[in-house]
Image (cartoon, rainbow, N blue to C red; front, side):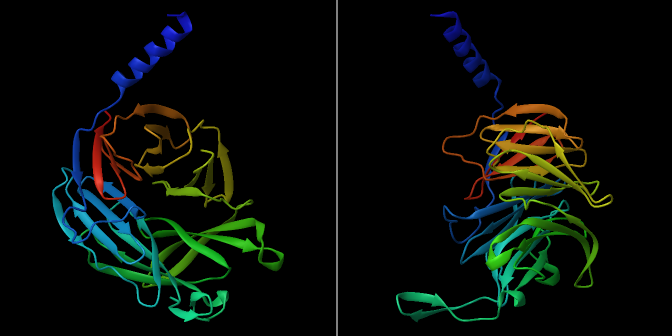
Length: 313
């Protein structure tokens, strides 16, 4: 065998033997009455008290909570929003979650060429409806955001802090090379803005993570590029993290940020310095779509709710 090929083979074998295997495997959606589809969107949260998984589909939105060993504590699949279509969830560090819906919901009517949306209010009348649920599936608060632009969406949350991205529109409805990020708190059903930061160009296909110190990390799914938005100074910093890509998911604990790309999780401090790289050996057929971290454990869930836990210390 040629020296170069021998070296590559040795590195490959080392990588396989050095990969972490799951310490536990379970299904957080095992108690649901239906089976999530392949297009389901999972949103996962973890803290020392347990796990919360929200699964969003076009006609069904479910919530399940479990302890850190995967024992199901609560499960429901009847979450809904009146006159709005649920499309996203924003997990919070305490295990609660914001369910995000856009309205008004447009029913379909039969017209020429098939089913088409009913004529409804103009884009300026659109709203975002957010309902917060605790890990037991109990509704605890709500807030409605009226859109100030044609493309305004909630992207991250932690505690009572909510972050909204607003992409401005250019001439004839084309996207402008400009956006803003609005920070605020939710109090008594109202969003009270505390800061607004310009962010040109708009972050397309980015995963948003709000850290414990209040910074917003925007991680490009396709590029791995990282932008950090500081609401206190109004600054935007680009961090040379060398993040692998495409990025599948990201999560944060009080001191670090974790980024999942393929079978690798990169751990960084909040200055963007790489602290560790973890290779993961997934079970057969497992394709993670969500990531959460608590203590010394990484939790990864696929679209069906199957979950694998990896110990990293």
